[in-house]
Image 1 (cartoon, rainbow, N blue to C red):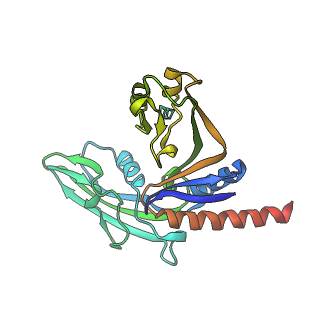
Image 2 (image 1 turned 180 degrees about the vertical axis):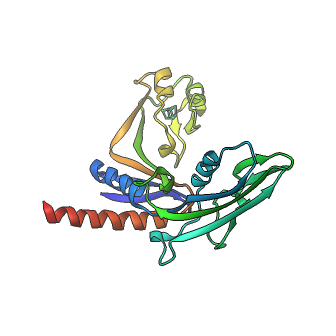
Image 3 (image 1 turned 60 degrees about the vertical axis):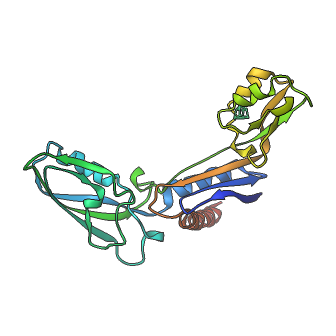
Length: 249
Ligand code: SF4
């Protein structure tokens, strides 16, 4: 099995896997979703809430905020506190939470928490702790999935209406100039296998299928950790689990 990066940034990566092994892909996906530690708000102490939003609803919204986290569940401190004190009229955003540690704060500060009318008040203290996706989905670090790698064959050298076929592609990866149909260089993996081109032109003109030897593994971090941090902890956990399993088999 070989892996190579198609594209990547701190928060997302597309990885081409050649000679894939489905059980291993599933194990890696589950290790990322279930075993990687991130921070999320777990306890909320409400001192004052005269808004129209129930305490429980606001606490649930706070719990779902992705927070900048520390790899491997931190190395020491396990709890991080936040304070929120606001008076209406005001729209209260995630960035209004005052963190005890300035490095631990909401990833998306412009998330709206609630709206306060004239004279309404909110005063609370929130405590974030580390957890994993196996405990609650709010701790899951990323959206992670894999999909087929496309194979596109054009069988005729000259194709009438090639430009019309190319115009049907929703991701615009086909070239249809001068009655010739081809895939734009470097864009093959963007095909979403929708079959629109083949359904219109017929299999004898353009044949779309899934490559049996390749797939694309996709990961998009929710922002608590970088993709690199997520993979490191997920692979370490997977290795540990394989060792444990091999002891009993
Ligand atoms: S299958 Fe869909 S996405 Fe792929 S080339 Fe054809 S029209 Fe474009």
